[in-house]
Image 1 (cartoon, rainbow, N blue to C red):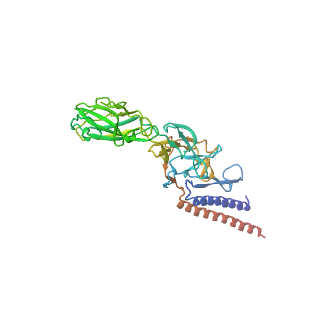
Image 2 (image 1 turned 30 degrees about the vertical axis):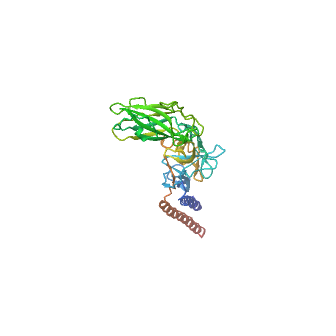
Image 3 (image 1 turned 135 degrees about the vertical axis):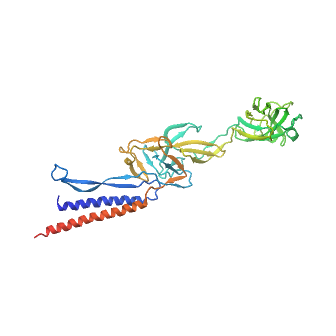
Length: 430
């Protein structure tokens, strides 16, 4: 090859080192870009010609070229943001983002998402996070990828109280009371507790349950409601809501049937009619009160378990995200409901993904088809909520590479100046 070929060999070195410097500059510029993955330029030699065409000993190179610029998908550090809709992947996987009104799909490690004006969970470009939606019960996952959307004005309707679980220990040392029960007379009962129930509109009603030891190993309970909450009732005067008996063996264990229906349709020992309607005009709900596991031990009477299955209407108050990627809606009535689950994607070749800016990637034939799965399943990483993944750029390593690339660039300029001097000497031969 001629001396002039050395100019082009040096030029190829300048081009490749300039590209490498551009990659380093890009890495440093994105040192604080959420979810950014550092790139690295890889060089390859360029074969000029074979002098003989017969052996490998006489091949002359023609410089260098850039073989590829690969992204380093190593995990970046996680930074707490305090924003509940920010998420980061801790491990393998990329978020799946759908472009609205198209079939285009992109992928990213940047999890700075929020709910837009239509309730879609999206990034700052308006690309919508893809996941699996739960059915109306919040229990069953529909495993078809879809836009994650939560109606910020959603409301859970009220639920009527149908079951009450009440576990009480009733003091076996209490004396037997034979007087007729009167809620206004504390000498006719030994213990009481209050339970809240809900009607079909979600209105709450306070029911007070009184316990009286009416015989050995036998207690009578009376559920009462204040007259102010009863149609045509008298405020301050209790009305009977339910009644029953509890029988125990000598070990203090409940032996009688422990499920009692309320409201009753009669007053014990009275011809008075039962509660017809609440003050709001609704009929009392049919409710079963369950005393299973109630005991009679020689220790102070105390309530141990008290829960009921009704609740008032509730508005959405916030959305939380757990480590499995579930978006859980929190309502003002205390209920929590699964709404959707974030999906993650992986690829046979991550380096085959096409970088398209905004920390987004697209699948290519080189990357292979995406493999979709749920966080924490099939090798996918888990979700860290209220956190973002920082750039994985190592500044110290980038500065070292910068020095090396600069020296390589200087060396290639030296090749060009030396070749120029040699050519000048050749021209000046006389």
